[in-house]
Amino acid sequence: MTDFYAVMGNPVAHSKSPFIHARFAAQTGKRLRYSKILVKPGAFPAAVATFRAEGGKGLNITLPFKREAWELADLRTPRAERAGALNTLWFDPDAGLYGDNTDGCGLVRDLGQNLGVQLARRDVLILGAGGAARGALGPLLDEVPARLMIVNRTESRGRELAAVFREQGRVEACGYPDLANTAFDIIINATAASLDGVLPPLPETLLKPGGICYDMMYSENETVFVRWGQNHGASIAVDGLGMLVEQAAESFRIWHGVCPQTDAVIASLRNLKKA
Image 1 (cartoon, one colour):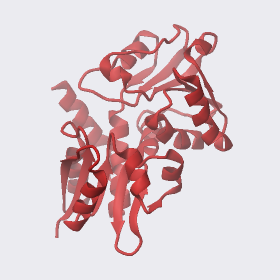
Image 2: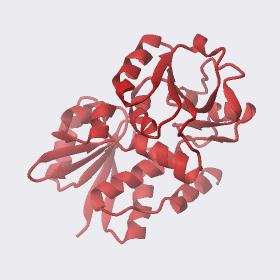
Image 3: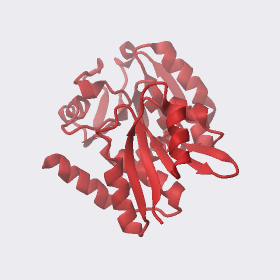
């Protein structure tokens, strides 16, 4: 019997999830079919209901439906509750629709396991205060950084987000002008602006010598934020392709009860980008 899974979003044609999950299935001997489903605005609940009625087992959710998925779920994991958004859904015949958010977990695993970056006792800056930042904050704070600063063009939004997570660790917020006299070990871009070639106003001295620049976004070419890191002495400047694979691996574990190996899949996607 072949189980049916899919990713829902709009747009969704660019998604690499079918490639990733096919590789995981081949590794682990699981039989599955994984598709892309384009969902029109306003049609998300009906699309999930149709998928379930057709025998679907689980869904990955991408933009712009992560918050709507959170609202739709009957049960949410603690990390999903904090994140306020879901990227993983699965169905239980008795309890209903379960939801989780594996994005922050994927980010932390890529940084720690794949790139060898230690977050504990480091000064970390997150650019942006939207859904991507919110999904990352909990897992980042679990690593006990010395401080975690959120910077956002609308400072009040950053402060509201910091307040949600303040009990979990030292998290603060500021506006871009406040970055003039401070520096960080690790800078994480959680905005989509870099995909459009837009960079926020970052001081030349913002990155400590040998620091890390990580763009949660990924594209076929280097993002403007990755190039900024390279030009400002970063020891590592990388996009979010590894995070994409790691969050997918956590979804796969939730659905199938087995942890796939990610390094070969990340390497394959990197090679495809170079081709």
